[in-house]
Image 1 (cartoon, helix red, strand yellow):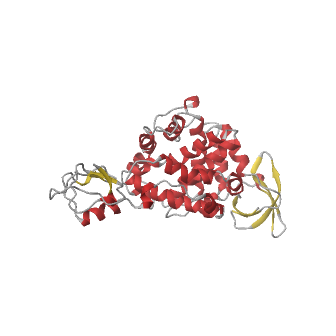
Image 2 (cartoon, rainbow, N blue to C red):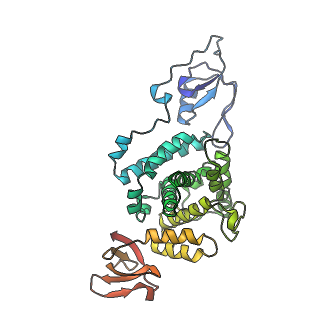
Image 3 (cartoon, rainbow, N blue to C red):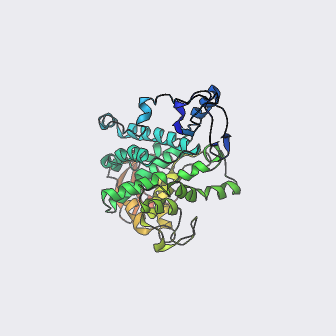
Amino acid sequence: MRVSSSQLVPGCVLLRDVKGKTNRPIIPEKTVLTDNHILFLKKFLIDQVEVSERLAAGTIFKPLPIRPEEEQPEKKTSEVELATLSFKEHYLYVVASYKKLFESWRNNQPIRNLAVRNLLLPLLDRMDDIGSSVYTLHQYANKKDYFYHHGVSVAILSAYLGKKMGYQQGEWYQIGLAGLLSDAGMAKLGDFILKKEGALTEAEKIEIRKHPTHSYRMVEHISHIPYTVKLAVLQHHERIDGSGYPLGLSHEKIHSFARIIAVSDMYHAMTSERLYRKKQSPFRVIEELQKEQFSKLDPRVVQVFVDAVTNFSIGTKVILSTNQIGEIVFIEQNHPTRPIVRLESGEIITLSNNHQLYIKEIVSM
């Protein structure tokens, strides 16, 4: 019989191996469980196990009652409660919750589609807040929890891009869901993915290139996840020129949802502080995306993204790469990342004529 780990009692007999994140048995079948075994299962976030209907002593096993909070593990957070949170507070709540989900996947628990949707969709519904925070989103991340911030931010940016490109709500929901799940397969990789400091080895880079396939396998047989989402999860590292992975697809063979996630993923990764790589200026990253748009990335997606992220107003205060503070006084349509800036000293600088200088951060808009 299959029961929750919280229903176990000492003397229960396992009928199947309990496997951890390496897919090796952490408690073998036929083990007679003790209090320590049961505590161990809970710490490893093992939700359910197969046990005999009789205890080792031969008596009938009577499962302990399920606690009320376990009867509805996917209960949606109160909309009233979420409405009291600022966008940043709501975002950080989703990041913390996603971290717990990811840890359960590392312990071989399946993806629960309803739990993921109930967590993500209320945040995606805050499109007005997302629009005003899209530039500063990368500033919320930190080295320690970068990976979890990245998953949530890619979901937000991808859904936002989908909406800006004219997709219907149901479609940009799907794009955001695919963005969140695209790195789920990282749960199948070694601990280096979360803890490694310094440059990755070639072997580690090869391992990372396997994560889209792992992600796809984790969602492949979940009937309530649309096939378009599954395709986007598998293809989000494919590139227009065929240089991507895992299949080396090109051009129209890459689903439009995957093309959107590719841009969001690259932008957030490059602008965030990571354990093994320094962050870059969002403006330098945008310029890099513009260079890639006619070879590796979808030009339409890149253009919509650039328009969204560089939608500044005159008077926006910025910090330059020299750490000088100034304000934007004119935006050139053909060079949105390189406006004309007036420094606090009164000096006027045309960034499009000085490629050694660039905007490092936005101070206020």
